[in-house]
Structures are given as structure tokens and as C-alpha cells.
Image (cartoon, rainbow, N blue to C red; front, side, top):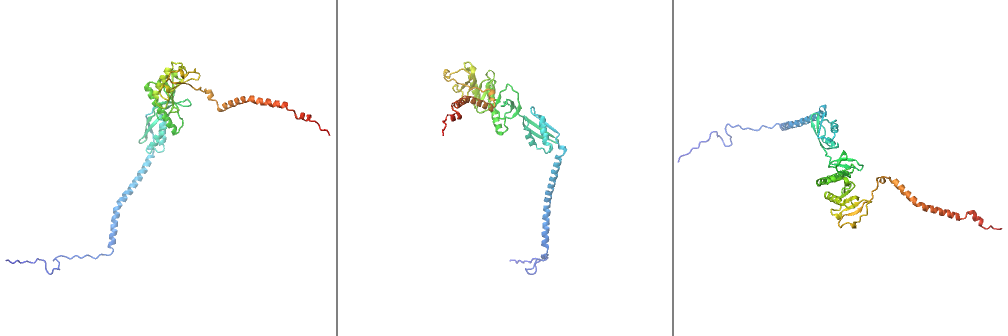
Length: 377
């Protein structure tokens, strides 16, 4: 066997506890007093410098906002934005000058830029014939108004006899002239929401009737529709039948008017024809459900002489003359008192005659004293 000689590594000398040759031992320096506090201050300064840009940005944004708002106020109030041009379109019945006046009044204090366009549009709806009004800006000094007008749909006759145009929402559009068009009676002239709702219901029912009658060819015989009571619709005829009223009730107006006119044409050829004042078909379309009203001065038509199933004939109530209806209540009361006084006059005269007779028969006090015997002594 060969012997192996292990050569010791260079640089190792001495015992195991010694370090490598050439290596320098580093020892920590002793800490100085106050070093910890200075480091804390420097760290806080670095944090402050980190937050400083954010605070600056916020401050700058606030300043810019203030400047923009001040500039906006100055610009909006400047004469540069005062309204000089108001363009109105879509008017054929509404008064364009009234619309321009309202718009100019609405922007007089604010100018075009700060104008409340919604409030101006709402105010324009109060102008006659205006249904909708859209207002827009045309910078720097103009406004544009686009008007949608209301359409006249019906002529209404008021209680005072005046004629008015109304639209399908029951809005009063102004005076109307009497025409051959069917008119409507029954109009609440109050300004409450309840009155507007009832009028709207009446107009809708009226338009429904007239459309149906136009389709059936019946409208040419109708002069006026009375909707004082929407559940008791009545129709006044025109032409030779102008004095006749048809009572339709609350539904099925087309069929009921058609049947009533057919029955009227038939009865015109009978003895009661010249005396007919109304036909009531409110209870149904069957002949036995109808009622024919004749004038009070008509001959006595007996229902027994009519065929079975024919409409019942009744005598209409006598109408009060316009002169009698217009008499004041006090005048009527005085007339009644005069009649009562006249009726009581014979009885009063009789009592007076009786008193006078009793007075004559009764002796006077002087006569009584004379008739008594005188006392002697």
C-alpha cells in the first residue's frame, strides 16, 4: 500500500480558534446619543413631503372651481347673454306675441344662460290653445320655442247660452260661433279639479257618441247632446223633429238612437205622430221597454187601443213658461198671500156682521139703569 501524505492547507496556522489570515475583524461603532430622534424627524419630514403634493392639488382644484363659478356668474349676468331673439314656431291659433312676452319676462333677470327653461315651458301652457311648449337656448342671446297646439274637438253651450270651443281634455279654448256641428250641453264652469274631471268625462263620452253616429249616418239628425247628467244622456233632434228629445240613458248610445229614430219614423204615420215630444229608450231596445211622450194638449190616446208589445204612451208634463219661471220668489209669495186673503175675506165679513147685530140687540148701560126700580126710603 502506498502511503498518502496529507499536506496542511496554507493559511491555517495556529489553533482552531484563530481566524483566517488577512481577514479584518469589524466591530460595531458605539451609538451616539440623539441619533434616534434625528432619524424620527427625518422620517416625518419625508412623510410630510409625500403628502404635500396631494394637499396642493386639492387647494388648486378649489381655487379653480371658485374662479370658474365667479366667471360663470359674471358671464351669465353680462349683457352679452341678454335675450334679444325669441323664435316661436308651431302657432296657428295661439298668439305668438303673448308667447314672446312671457319668454322675455322669464329671462329678464337671469339672461339666456341661467334661464329656467322648465318654468317658462310650464307658464306657456296657460296661454290659450297651447298644449305643449319646448323652450331651448340659442347662445349667446336667443331662445327657441316649439309649440304644440290644442285641437278644437267639440262646441259646448253653457247655461248662459254662450258657445265655447273645447279640446279632447275638456280645456276651454275660447268663444265659438254656432254652426251645423253637433253641440254639447252640460258644462261645469267651476275652476276646481273636480269640475275639470267631470268636464273631461263629458267630452270623452260626447266624442264617443258622435264618432259612432257619424259611422252609422245618424249624426245629420242630431242637433245637440245634453250631458248635464252623464248617466242620463239626452239628444235633441234637428229639422222637422227639432221639438223632439231622445232619452238614451248611460250606454249603447248608437244602437239606442238608431232604434229610437226608426220608431219615431214609424209613429209619425200614426195619429199620435204630430204630438210626440220625446221617446225614452233608456230602459232597453225592445218596443215594450220604450215610452213615447206626447204633448199635454194631445187627445187622450189609450194604451189599450194599441197593439200588444207597442211602446207605452204617456202625457208629458206641462212646461212652465219662461215668464213664470223668471218671476221672483217674493212676487209669487205675494200672489199666494193675496189669494189667501181673498179666501178669508167672506168669513171676516160674516164675523163683523154678527158683531154688529149683537151690538144692536144688546141694551146700552143707560137703558139698564133706567129699567131698574128705584128704592124708596
